[in-house]
Amino acid sequence: MRFLRESLAEVLPREGPLLIAGLFSNPQEALLGIVELQPDIVLLDEAFPDGPAVVGQIRYIAPPVLVVTIAVAETPEEVVAWAEAGAAGYIPSTASLADMCRLLVEITRGEQACSPSVAAALLRRLSNGVATKSRSHGSTSLPMLTAREEQIAEMIVAGLSNKDIARRLDIGLATAKTHVHHLLGKLGLQRRGQAASWMREHRQ
Image: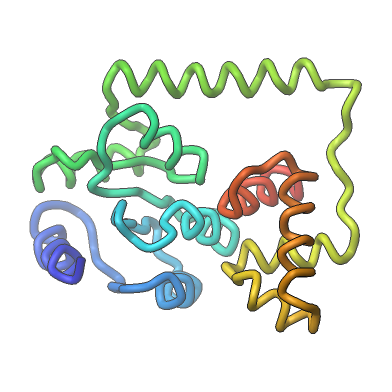
């Protein structure tokens, strides 16, 4: 990963109108750097630890930033998962360096080239989401969070583990796990990384 980061930092400015503001090797460094540097785009390697959760955290702390996942296997499952996490675009693993520069410029313009199968999967996902909302409209309101659930949601978005949450709230680890489990169930979520997306959508 270090080789990829440093190579891109050296080559991208020569190939296109992109300037590199910083390089980060772990989520904590990345989040702190994004707050400080306020970049327009964040390139996130598909292999970055807890990548989808990090996308949600970036979008939460810096909503205007475009998160672009690179080296993505261009399958419907992979692309939809990154889109659900909050990525603004992706660079497939088959792209050349010249392709990458062009695709990044296109993404900044609100464009994204993708295969027909990926486009169809994204449309199906969007259609299913609209259908679900339509069925629930008027009969099910958005869940109201308690003050404790709000605290835990904020901590999940910030990337805290169950152990960190337990320490921060001065509660047992088992209690923290229970709180997190109940919160995700209440929000209809399956993964912690989806919490940031929910917070963005429903706390405007």
